[in-house]
Amino acid sequence: MEIKVLDFKQINNLGVLQFATKELDTFNYLTLPKAIEKEYVQVKEVSEGGEVNNLLVVNNSKHYVFIMDGEILEGAKQNRVVNTSILMAPSSKNILPVSCVERGRWSHKSQFFKTADYHMPSSSRSRKSHKVKQNLEENNEYMAEQGAVWEDVMNVSTFFKVKSKTDNLSDVYFQLQEDFEKNLKNFEINDMANGVSFFIGKEMISIELFNRRDVLQEHFNKLLTAVQFDVDIAKKIDHLTFDAASFKIVDTIDKISDLEKQEYDSIGVGTDLRFENKVLHGFQLFYKNHTIHLSSQKK
Image (cartoon, rainbow, N blue to C red; front, side, top):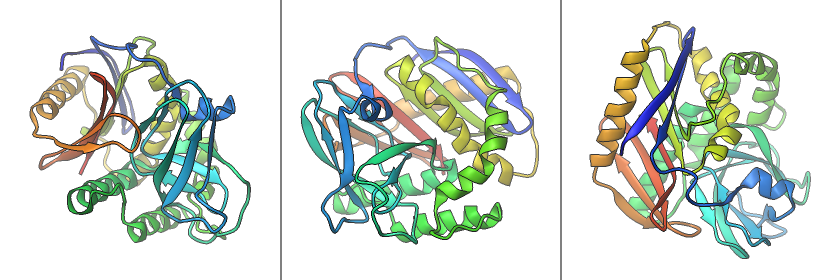
């Protein structure tokens, strides 16, 4: 896959590299936040009793709708995180695999879910995604390990000294939100970018590539916030040059392209391709010759 590096900026330990591919904006769809805002899509419990690791998503529109792995859903009986990226067909219903990020609540706060202003912390999301890959290989299910997700939420809460009555990850975010938003002002989205890679010091943490530039623009601040959780935990500060960061992203994308991929039917439409080597793992959501979303995380 050929890419063009557009920008790299590093402040203290946090580095953000933006890039573009040749093929972009070639397939039209809405993101889940926009679809919910327009009242095209409803996300709710699967039944009155509910199931911790499954939600019902109803698309009442004529649009395809993209739901991103790591997206936080707030409301209903407890807050959840999305286990994998999916593309919903127009006028369709799907059972969405999720994990709980609010252990201490099981009562309705609202009938429908809304999307939060942040994504799951990067390191927690990586561990969740790795478990999803294992469950796909063993059981053909997009399930994570719920106990491990709860443990991650507890560890983040403990590190940032946040006490939550319901063990709610969102309570950690709300306490850190002001500082996070100050840091967001240091980084601007490049309008030509459809891909981004995040670094902590000299270490590449994640890569996110979308079919559409506007999708990256919509998720940019949420993804940046997700990395900031981990930046505060890292102690040593290492600086990376533009050339070194550019080499790393090009080399990593080339390696991902060459990796053997395991193919699974997506929850929605399209194909889910999983890949892994000694240092990274991830997936590629593919539909009608379009890469809707490619995501790679550091192990």
